[in-house]
Image (cartoon, rainbow, N blue to C red; front, side, top):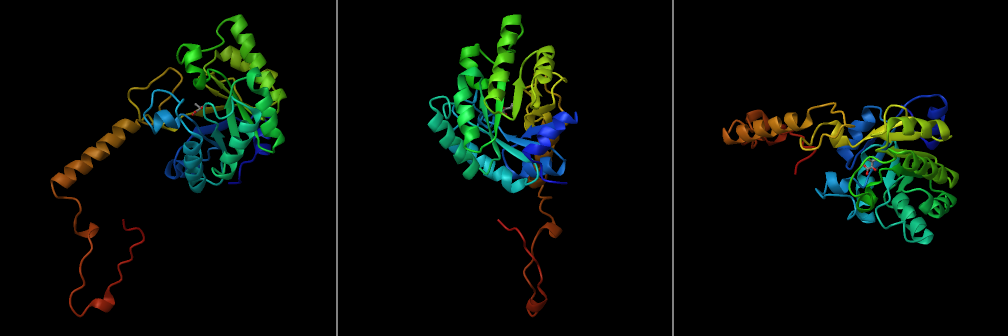
Length: 284
Ligand code: KIV
C-alpha cells in the first residue's frame, strides 16, 4: 500500500471515500493500525488519559506528544501522521504556536498538527500553515476546554450553538486548515458542516455524515470496561481477552508449566560446543 499524503486525503473527500483515522501512542499499536490499512494516525493528547490515567488532557506536555509521536512513526511509516498540540502550547501567541508545531514535526516526525478551537485561534492556524506545516482543526466538543464547557458534553444542540460550531469550522478552514475533526455534535450539524466545507471532516461522536471517522484505539478495542459512551463501538472485547491472557500467564507461572523445555535454553554438553547454534534475536 502507498504512503498516505495530504493530497490523498483531499482526494478522498472529492471521491467520497471514507477516511479512517485512529489514535495510537506507541510503535506496536501503530504497526497493527498500519498493517490493517488505516489512512491516518493521530497521536492525540488523549494519551494523557489513555496512557497517563489522568482525568483530562490538560496536563499533557509537548515533549510527551513528541515522544509518543516518534514511537508511532517508528512503527508506522505509511499512514499520514497527525500530532495534537497540547493545551497552552498554541493559545498564548502565534510565535509559540509556530515554534511548538515545528517541534512536533522535527522531534515527533509528525506530518501535521491538530489544534482545538475556532475563530479564537485563526491567527495561530494561519501562521503555522505559513510555516509550511499542515493543520487539522478540531471544533465542537473540544476537550482542552473541558472546564469552560462544564464537562465533556455534546455541543451545538441548539440553533445558536450549532451556528457557532459551523462558523468556527469555516474560520479554521479559511485560515488554512486542510481537515477538521468534528467531535461530540449532533449528526445533522456534522453533515451540514461536512457539506459546507471544501476540506474533509473527521467525526468522533458526530454521526455517519462526516468524510471520515476517528476513534481512540483503546476504545475501539474495548480495553476499558469503565468507558462505554454512546458513540464508541467496541470492535473487540479487548479487556476480557487481555485479562484472560494475563490470568493464563499467572496460572502457568504459578503451576511451573511456563516456561517449558522448548521455551528454555540449555547449556552445551561437554565436547559439543561447536554444535551450539541457538540464535537469540531479542534477549532482555
Ligand atoms: O486527543 C484525541 O485523541 C483526539 C481525538 C479524540 C479526536 O483529539
